[in-house]
Each structure stands twice: as structure tokens, then as C-alpha cells.
Image 1 (cartoon, rainbow over the protein chains, first blue to last red):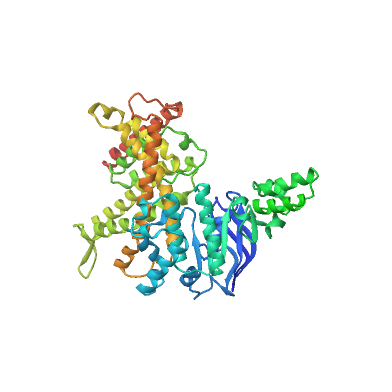
Image 2 (spheres, each protein chain N blue to C red):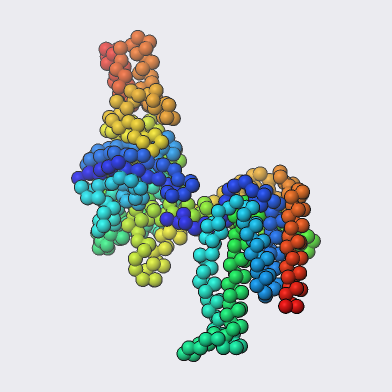
Length: 282
Length: 269
């Protein structure tokens, strides 16, 4: 049970003077249950890549397999695929349209042809999963704050009960508190249900804490694909493509240069604290 | 998905026609369209065709871009032709069932088709060689005298340029919302007409909201820059006639004179 990308390429405006490569020969496997961070500078092809995962864009070269089946082969049920691979777009709150929050979240499961009872159960569960307060269930989604709107939009995708959840910059435009809340919710959901999560971001800080694998994209190609600690060792290359390792990694490296025997494979504040205390012998 | 629609289809290149003052191109296009209806001999069409060919050649825009605009009116063209062909009274040429094709009908329908074709290609030349901004600039300047009779010329042209500017933005937005709803299992393609219309709601509501939001933001940004309408407003690049523009006017007049001469000569034949 996995998504496999086999030499996938994508060209925008194919066959015109303005043709531009967005993806170049991408080979990836997304196995079940992983928490993956997809990172890259603006225009590196992240968003184009995630739109391939549920068949919204068809590659101009190569194949994509979901559970061993080519998703662009004749007779493949794309609707079914889209319920299995839930995609939350950038600024998802811009897609809200219903009269109240609850009905909006029901839109996804209703499209799957589920019974009314099942639809409402799922909507309720999804809203609970994103931590949306129950007293606002029947308010217009347009009266909510930005952070709450985003929760509703994410719930709208979660209500389809996907096996793979893909989030394209879910924290863009949120304040630090809203950002942490959303990311913590996603991590909790991952721990609770074992769902596969692909988190797109351009900030290492955001995702270092959560993911167990990082894919770095640059100009339409995969630059690194490894566990976070390995990826962060390449800080010079990361900086060359407009990214950076987390601040804690830099701090630990500086400490080491100044003669403190700390390990440098540290990405979060908590790990850094533990490591420093260990060296200080407390 | 919506990329195929081209509105305000400017073709970027360097040519004499591109560099002409938009006022010349606007008046030229209008005069050319009027000229198409001034004559009804083949000689006149020959002159009109020649003129158009020279202009297209000078503009350096590939011919297929001109023809692209024709696709949209193909139906209208055939419709007009059919009506003129069968419903014009006169000397019968071919007769079958209840339909009669007359000599006059054939003549008129062919003329009509040529006229419409030239008209569309003629105006395509203008939109292909002039940026929308330039076009509205030219219109504002041309309609300037109407200000005297209290027509809000500046406001109208400002609205036009904003509308033109928003077309690609809203197209992109439509594409994005459509994809987002498809990802939530929406289906825009299957079903009967009622079902299809209903399926548009999840697309149209967010689109309208975003259009209003953008309009609001733009209004705020304009106000923050002290926009007050046309009175006393100066331009960074005011339109100014150059030598080639006067030359172009000369060519235009020569074309019209040639046409009239043809008409005069033609009336003796």
C-alpha cells in the first residue's frame, strides 16, 4: 500500500513557446504510515508534485502508481483515489462555500455517496480531530477567524477519511500560535490513526519536530531524501538552494566549534536542552 | 484547465505596428471596419485584403494567431451565410425542395462572409499588437472631448483596465478552486443540466467571495495612494504622436481614397 512515482516529469504550457519544466524525472516511494516533510524554495515544484499524488495533474512523462495500479491507466477510478489521498491546498479556507461550518465539512463525504448518517458522523469526527469548538458548528464559515477557517477546511478533507493526507503549506499566513496548534493537531492525528502525512513547507523549523523523513526539492528535482538529521548535515547545500537547517542545529555546531563536546544531530529545542545537560553532566 | 481561453491576447514582439500610438490603431481599426461596408464590388475587397495583408505582415504576428479568433465566430458566420443564401429574393440559380438559391443571395452571402472575416481579423490585429493598458490609455485620450458633456471618461477607462487586469487573476483562481473542490470529490462534468448547474455552486461562491475580497483590497490600496479620479491626474508616460503615427494616418487616408476611387471606377463598369 503505497504511492510510487516512477520517473515523473511535468511541463507547464507544453508545446508552446512558454514551456517550462516544473518536475524533472522524480522517483519517490511514499509508504504507509510515514510522516514526510516536503521542502523546497518557492517555485521548486512542491505544489506541482503534490497535485500529481491524487491525479489532479497528469505527468507529461513517467508513471504514478497507487497500490500497484497506474492511476492514469484506463478504467482507474480517480474519484476513489481522491478519497484515499486527501489533498489540502494552500489557503484552503478560500474553498469554503456552504451556509454553515458543518454542512461545508459534509461536502466531501456526501460526494462519496455515503448515507446521511455516515456523512454527519464523519463530519463531526473530522471537526473534533482538528479541534474545532462545537458551539460554532452552525455558524457561517465566513465569520470565523483565519485559523479557524483553516481548521474547517482541513476537516473538510479529513471527513473523507483518506489513507494519505497531503497538506500544502497548511501554516502559511498564520501566527506562531496558530501554526503550532495546527501542526500539533496534525501530529496528534497521525499518532492516533496511523495515517500517512505529507507536509509541504518551506520552513525546516516547522517540520523538523514532527517528520521522520524529509524530501528536499530544488528546481523540479529531488535534492535530498533522507531522515531529518542526515538532511540537516548538508546545511551548506541547503543554504545554496535558499533553505536552512533548523536554528538548533546551528547553535549546537557553534558550541562544538567552541570546544563543547555536544552532538550536532539535534533539531529541536527539547533535544538541544537534553544534549547540553548531558554534556554538562547534570 | 482554463488556460486555452485567451482574452486580451497580446502577442509580444517588436514591430512597427506594435510601436504605433494606440490612438492610431483604434481609429484605424474603426475606419477599416466602416470601410468594409462602403463598397460591394470584388475590386473593393481586393484592396481591403491587400491592406490587411500588409498590416499583418508588418505586425510580425504569426498568422495562426489571427485565425484563432475566427473559431469563436465560425457558427455566426455560417448562420449568416445560410440565411442570406436562402432568403434573398431574386433570380433563381439552384432549386431543391423548398429552398432556392438565388444569384443575389449567393453574392450577398459571400460578401457577408468576407466582411465578417476581415472585421474579426482586423480587430484581432489591434488587440494582438496593443497591450490592454495602452488600449485603455488610447481610448481615454480619444474620448477626451466627451468630458465636456460630463461623460466620466477617466472612470470608464479605469474600470476597463481594472477589469482586463482581473481576467487572468480570476481565471487562475477558478482553476485553483476547481481543483480544490475536485480533491473533495466534486464532479463538474457528469450529470444533466440541472445537476451541472448545481455543481457550480461550490465553485462560484468562493470565486465571488474572492473577487469581492480582491476588489476591496484594491480599493483600499488605491485610496491609500490618494487616488481621487481623473481630475488633475498626470501620466508617467503620456501618449505622444511620433512621425510614424502621422505616416500611419497618411497611409490610412490613402487606403480610403483608393477604395473610393475603386467605387467610382467600378460604377462605370
